[in-house]
Length: 283
Image (cartoon, rainbow, N blue to C red; front, side, top):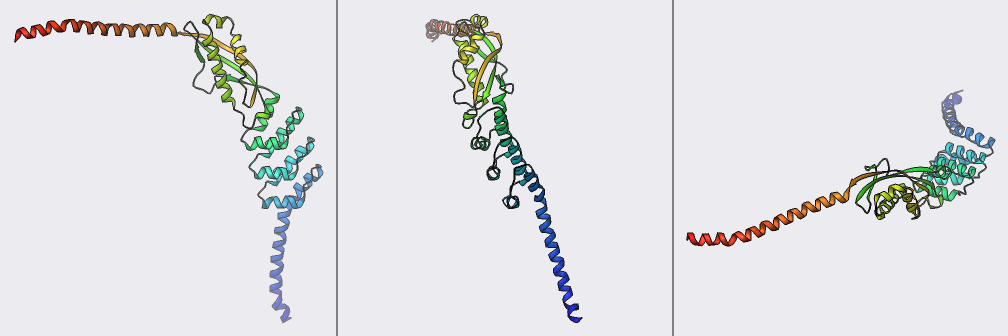
């Protein structure tokens, strides 16, 4: 009895500690049981040990499982290792998986390596796929810019103020390293200025505003960009100031000032001898 009384506190303590430890293990493991079963019944099996190890690798196990299931249900095979690797690299696995599903449905060839490279480059791969399927319109100049029109002067000195709408489709193959929308806007603006400037009169531009679009589109402005330009449409062309007349008026004012200065100089030179003569007489 004395032995039992002496040992029992240690045994009770050991049982309590063991019980607490066992509960911690069960609670730790139980949070992955649901994910394991969810993946298993969905046909996108993920190893239970892999789920546990994800915690130590600081990977969001739930995000990996959900995206693997989504890919599997869409008929795509994306492994757990691929999802983990992209997550650890700082990528957005949900965006990539959704983009690949959308690309597959649209019959666009998009490989995992390309999709993850685009995502890691900071581009929105999901938006890129959507734009490939459904082209978008870019205002030129951009509504977010300080200028509301593209101003150019025709050969007769009349200023024209133009706006254009550019319809583009994402070129996924050129998305990594390709120039952005800002480059498209800048190039189209430059093309409009060049086209208007090469016209002999502003009337020729106003008669056929479509010529601006055709000329600019023929320049291949989408080269080296992440987009393919489908069309350039002139949204508006207005007559601005008569720059030629304004320049002529400024030139006339400048000439007048120059002539007045020369006349004053000649007058001063003519008067100078008389002033000198009077000064000599006063002496």
